[in-house]
Length: 235
View 1 (cartoon, rainbow, N blue to C red):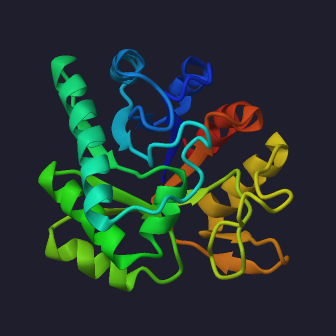
View 2 (cartoon, rainbow, N blue to C red):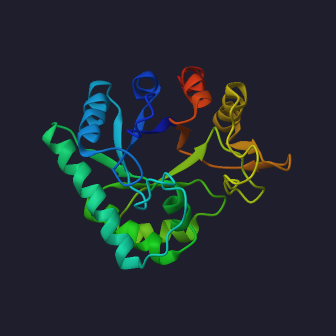
């Protein structure tokens, strides 16, 4: 199991997080960042041997990409394609490459609730020969089958710093305590995921989540504090 984080979002935490990450999801400019900052972040990941992921979003800086937008599937495809293409070009110019794709925020949620959006994102991953990061839902069979048709490998992700519902979904950010702001709580959830592929959801029930990677949010100070202890648990 590997540790990943959303980076390149101008939060100021990237340098502090980087020594503990195996994977870095680089914002592609639509919810945060600029081409110049993307290049700086690519250089930082390369210097630390961190695998690069493209982290595209809806064009929504005001809400940090965390609000769904009414767009057609074709528009979603074009929006994501452009962001991933830019990051791949920047990475190539720095002598490295993008390895996987992880949509951000509302787009990440919508991808798992709209088969057309999911299929469009799988096509983009296939075009750029990238793996695709998805939530580690209890039942991913349909999503895996769609990806298999395009020969896209799925990376299953669980979050150490977010609360879960009993059906294995992330609790909405509109709910109180959906984002953990206590580092010990984040470390404990990561420990549960690492040791038992499970966690305690918001109702107090234990749910199973088979994950390949654990995510921390770089814009959450408690997650930054938790990065080093979680890294130690993984190594």
